[in-house]
Image 1: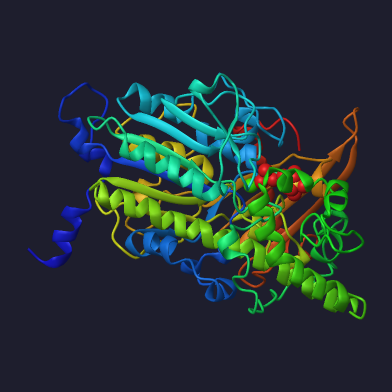
Image 2 (image 1 turned 180 degrees about the vertical axis):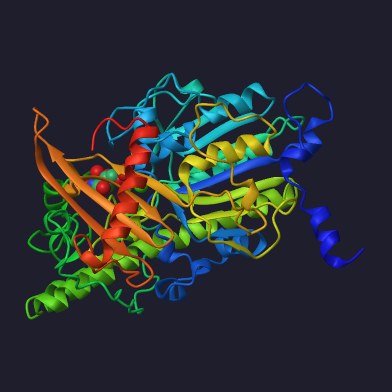
Length: 533
Ligand code: SGN
Ligand code: CA
C-alpha cells in the first residue's frame, strides 16, 4: 500500500468512527472529548500562526502548537461581530435573528436547543468555565463556574450551581484562574464518559489589563502600524465616518491607557472613578495595587512630562504603542495558559482523543483604519481566529481557506460526537474540511448582520454578503414608521483591494458584480426570513 492510501485510511471522517448515542459500555473509547477555548476579542493579527507583522514581535508559541499539529482556518468569520451574539450563535448554531441575541444586551431565546444539551443527552459530561455573558442561565452543563457579565481582570467572582446565585470572589488574575478551574474539571472528570469543556476567557477584552508578571513585557518594542492606520474613509458611506472607535480620538488616556497622573495625585482614585476604571482597581488588594503602581507610575510620569511637547501624531503613536503593549501582554498570558491546558491533556493521556479548538468571539481592530473594537463587516472584525487540533482526523499543518462561520461550530461538535444535527440548525459541520480540501458543494458566500445601534462605538446597523472575492455591505437605520434614515451600500473587490479602501458601489464597471451580490443578499434575506434591513 502506498503512503497516500495509508493516510486516507487513517483520516476517516470521525462521524464514522464514533457513536456516543447509545448506552454502550465501550463508547468512551470512540467519542472525542471536546475542549473549546474561546478568548474575548482576540485578533488573528496577534497570533503568530497567522503570520502577521505584530505577532512576529509578540509570538504565541502554544497556540501555534495547536495550529502546527492541526488545522488553521484562514477564512473563519462570525455572523455578527459582538460578544453575546457570537456566544448565542456558538450555543445554537443559529444566526442572531433566529436565536434572538441580536444586540449586546438581553435577547437570547433560551427555548432554542443548545448543542451542549444534546451532548449531555448522549452521555457527555459538559462544563463551561469563564465568561458566559448571556442573560439566560447556562443550559446543558453538568458543571459551570462563570464570571459576572464581562468579568474582571483581577480577583473576579465566580458563580457555580452550588453558590446559590452568588459570585464568590477569588484571588488572582482572571486568565490564570479560569485555566486552573478548567484543569481541575479535566482532572476530576467522570472518567467513564467523554467530556466537552468550554474555556471562555475574559481577556483580552477592553481595557486590556495584564497579569503583574507581564507589566513590563514589550516595553521596549515598537509595534508597526498597519498600512490603513491613516484611512480617511474617503470612498465610504457615512458609518465609517461617524463611528466612535478611533485610537487617536476615542481611546481614553485614563480609562483605556491607564494614565492617572494627568492631574491627580496618589492614590489616584478620584481620577479613576471619574472614568469608571475604579472598579478594576478597587478589586485589587494592596499588594497587587502596589505592584501596579511600581510598574506603571514611572512610565506614566515620563509620558505626562513628554506629552506637553508632543505633536498630535506623536501622541497618537504613543496611544497606539500603549494599547498594543497592554493588549499583547494579555495575549501572552492567554498563550501561557493554553500551554497549561495542553500540558494537562498530555498528562491525562487525552491528546489523541480530544479535539482542541482555539477561537475568539470575533475579530478586533489593531489599528486598521485607525480603530480598536470590532462590529463592522470589514475584514479584521468579521474574521476570527480558528484553529482545531485533532490528530485522529486532522493532519498536522493543514490549512483551510474555505469560508466557514461561527454557526458551523455547534454542528461540527455534534457531528464529531456522532449526533445528528437538529434540522433547524443553520450551520454546517466543518468535518468535510479537515483534510484541507474544499468540497465542491461548499458555501460560496456567507451572510452577516450587525444590529447594535445606537450603542458603544456608534457603528450603524448593516447586513451583507461576502464571497471569496467580493463583499457587499448594506448600512441602514429606520425610524418608527419604517422610513430609512440611513440607506447606503459599499462594495469591495477583496482581491484587488484586500484592505477595503476603495468602495466600488455605483462604479458602472462593477454593476454586474453588484447585481450578483445583491441577488445573493436578497436570497439570504428571503431564505433566512430576515425581518429588518
Ligand atoms: C464594553 C466595552 C466596549 C465593547 C463592548 C462589547 N466598553 O461595553 O468597548 O465594544 O463591551 O464588547 S467598556 O468601557 O466596558 O470596556 S463585547 O466583546 O462584549 O462584545
Ligand atoms: Ca468580544
